Amino acid sequence: MDKLREILLAEDVEAEAVQKMEEYAKIILETNKTMNLTRITEPAEMAHKHFLDSLAPARLGLLPERGAVLDVGSGAGFPGIPLAILRPELEWTLLDAQRKKVDFITMCVDRLGITNVRALQGRAEELSRTQDFHGKFDIVASRAVASLSVLLELCTGFCRLGGKFLAYKGAETQAETEEAKEAAKALGMRLLGIYDAAVAGQSHWIVAYEKIKEAPAKYPRAFAKIKAAPIGLRKK
Ligand SMILES: C[S@@+](CC[C@H](N)C(=O)[O-])C[C@H]1O[C@@H](n2cnc3c(N)ncnc32)[C@H](O)[C@@H]1O
Image (cartoon, rainbow, N blue to C red; front, side, top):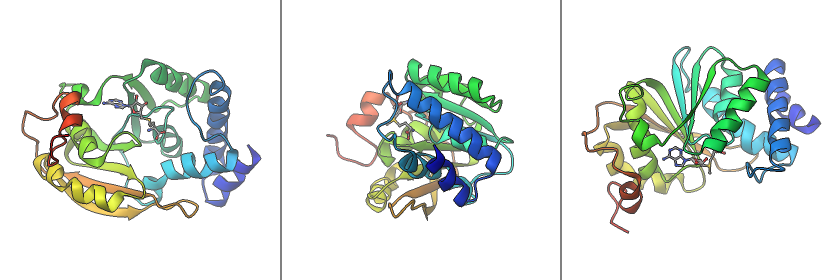
């Protein structure tokens, strides 16, 4: 883990946060022996592709001073855990559909002594309709879960009016953003910008939207419908 620590420190991540991230990386590697969490296991690669990539919204100044943030489809805890370590004053909710992923996140936050994270099991398209979660978050973020058109429908119900949705995207960002124009419009989301979040020469972007109005009540639809016919795209 020396390499991971070295890379994070060189990118000006605070030493205390780096120590927790290192501990978290160790738990991932240990658990990865018995549970399929990640294929990225080499420390330098973990530093770049998991940690620095996750931290992009903080580097880009896209996070508020205070507020509630939701990570949709957090998996092993990316981007939510590194961000929560870096920004302990924000309230973090990490959501995943799979119980074993949520149990893993819970185990990590307990072992790391992180008190600003709640791990939640459920499906985004169902929870975002409920009173407890609809419109309750200042920031909703998601990495490696679905195409942008699908992701917008899954996630935007969680945003409060004026809140932001941040999608972590790769090489196909421009095309996906273009393709998602109609979905964004239908869901009341305004494109704020596409921010360069390149890590170690790899093309990564944060696509940021602001919620400017509530979506019609028919959204989000059931997942099978979202997937079969994303808004604005022809039925597959
Ligand atoms: C490829 S993993 C990405 C995990 C993590 N965000 C990352 O970047 O490493 C996608 C995760 O999204 C979760 N997921 C997919 N669809 C979901 C939905 N509709 N609601 C909640 N979680 C979902 C899956 O269970 C899975 O853990």
